[in-house]
Length: 212
Image 1 (cartoon, rainbow, N blue to C red):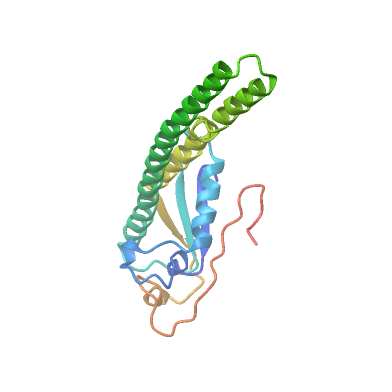
Image 2: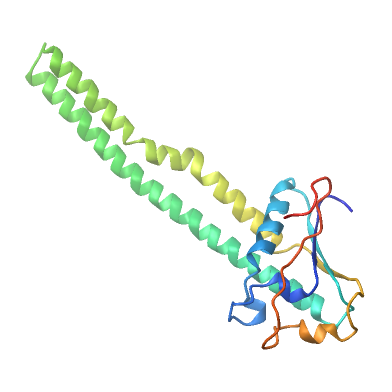
């Protein structure tokens, strides 16, 4: 199987989703383990690699439109994650701009105070030391906005781009008929009352082995 194909193996499709989420099926969150597994695998691929998701299900095919329903639910989930990450990036830049204004104002005040002390106490060694200290303090205040604009923004943008790719990737289901033919009735699209919860398992990655 090509390395850009993400494979997940479950006994039932409902194991992919958070069973305590009361939202309609299409808006339901993925199970945290399934979410982490898919994102982790996708982040290992090249930024321009085309990816797809194959879900191996241990039962026969059920509803004719269940692949389309699963695809829509997964795309909706990662689309919402992409939108939330873009909002996070905008908020980061907004805080960065505010921090930059505050830091520049603080630096200007420190320089002005230092110059004033030097002019008033001309020739004093201690004044020179104080002036240098004020100048250093002013530049230290620039650390936070510089960190935002030099380092903090690009991991968030990379995360948003990954979610966008996951929100548009092809999703298919491969069936392995190891369960009764009508097993899909207890699987899709909701968990019947009193049904026992199962733990999802994932297909091993090439060369990595299965997740614990």
